[in-house]
Length: 218
Image (cartoon, rainbow, N blue to C red; front, side, top):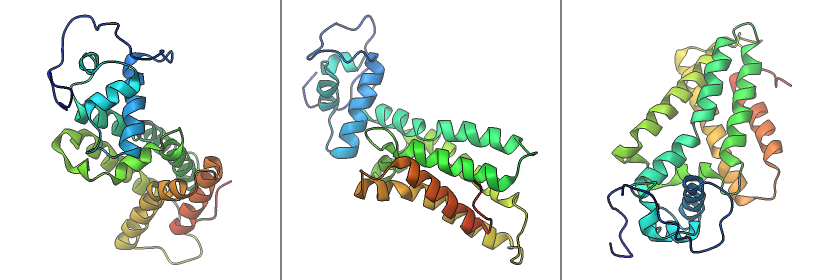
């Protein structure tokens, strides 16, 4: 296998213990995902090779193929990790019909921003990559579409306030604006990484409720 190859068969058998630097204590799969997250968000997907990911993780390229089949598999798993926790939370919040919908929407927005903007690599930045249309990433896109639908369902469940009730088109627009607001916070975070993520998350959730026509739910 050449050093610059970005694709390769998944090898079978036991990986070689051929680390290039001191281990961090993380399992190899997690080490590779952390390395890929850093390189994809800093260098970009196209400019990152599997060899670079493996070396950043402290292992040889051949060893990496024991865990991942290539760059797309790494990207897919990283992207799905940015949606899966929020999707699970949204399903639970939808089932909690005895609680105010505005409060549940606020909690989902806040949690989603914390997930997208938290951590050392701000994985929400992966949403800006031009490769998101690739067929291998279809599971991520389906998960994201389901999450968007849950945002809309919580928005629909908020009783109208003093303003006239919004029609279906207006509610759809508000839902898209709220979803875009939550995902767009990562751009603010990227421009000002010193700003506390918790403050951004609460401010975004408050703004989402204003878009929804509801008072902030603290």
